[in-house]
Length: 434
Picture (cartoon, rainbow, N blue to C red):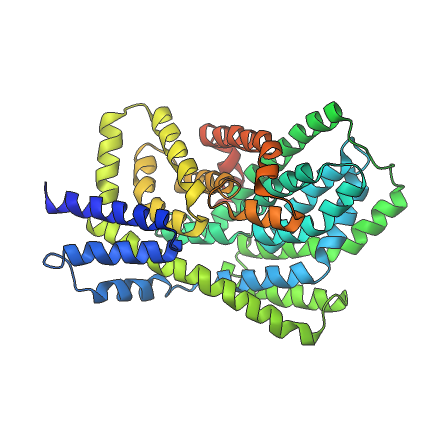
């Protein structure tokens, strides 16, 4: 067996062994990369290569957007924005059968899109809606499952941190602006599909509905949430129009959300130090994941793993439809045990050359990858959203999974539609010339 084959086996075996042992993902990535380089010390640059690649991996202006968006999301989470969005969504669609479940989905779509964080959406919306839905007669497990599934829409509808990470991992093949525009229709489609499933469940179980509100109240709730909704227009509109970059937009989002939170009197200046500290901790975790993942991505390139994968899949499976299906299944499995950021950074260099050789646009693949991983964050054993949503609802994970299954199946159906109908992702970028 060649040294290259031994290196690849060591890399993947050590990574999965450490992951099963229970080490944090970032440590698994860094240790397995270092072990593989030590095995090839006669053929590779020295061990300092790992440190160098980790450092240069985050030396990117585009990555500055991530800590700013994390901070903006934390400010919004504590700044009273979620309540205003929920009230607007309730006035808009609360009178439908199972209305509060629709409100949960729509509010999660709005808040997730504005904050750019699925975890923020799940915690902010779930903490308000779960008790309210239980008081109206909804099972707590059902409320939690709706909150978990709908929070993923914020990872597709811009601004989205994971789409920025994919733009970095693609090596410039996909721009942040194009990815942001491409995420709109798939994200909305996921939300609408979840509402369709909820409609069937609501009619079968005869969930309650709210009374129809007068237009005056709808208009009042819209006005109260207008400035919050405008943040989305300012950020995405400015990026697409070329007024500012994604990083500059993230800085504007922090300033805008801070002023908004203060004007709503939900936070005071004394609250900001604790918000900054929480955001700094989250940013440190994300950036360390990116550091180690970039080192592993470099190792992939050095070992020619992307080229080997492309040659193997194209030569062995000639049907592009089947190849896309295999990639989707692989990413769905990966998403069940790996967090989104390292998964994007590790598997983009492996699969992007395969799909581009088969004619798929890098932006289209980016949306497919993120949607795959959105399903993964809702499933055990890693499932970040699954545990956050269950914790917010104060209910066990085992109770949440049964009502969550039909929602996950629906998301997989949407994934297949997005995969095999490129226009769902590519129409808006094409319309804006991105």
